[in-house]
Length: 130
Ligand SMILES: [Zn+2]
Ligand SMILES: [Zn+2]
Image (tube, rainbow, N blue to C red; front, top):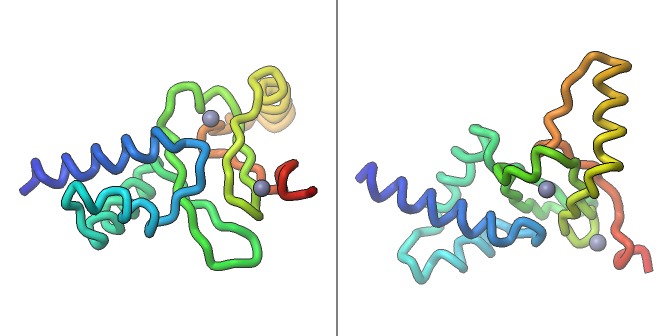
């Protein structure tokens, strides 16, 4: 049983990882994993476990009850901050030099180490402002 749960978790993580920029709701995730025989309740259970472990982040879209999930475990994501569009839910990975100066500034000024992979700035993307 434990082995089975690990497999579900792996599949869930790899799905999130492959779609790191796309907003995925729990419904999208369970629809994608249904052919693999993973139930909706298993998806929810795994998502909340991964969220507690800090491997997955929950993003909300402004003005709606929509909740999206984002994978935060990618190595390169430790090096930059993230932008989340509160209209379409898309995640943007900030380019490294810009992130570094901000993160370093915070470190110098406040002696505070920013957890970049888990740091999201909310706003509205270019497309959604048109
Ligand atoms: Zn990233
Ligand atoms: Zn947008």
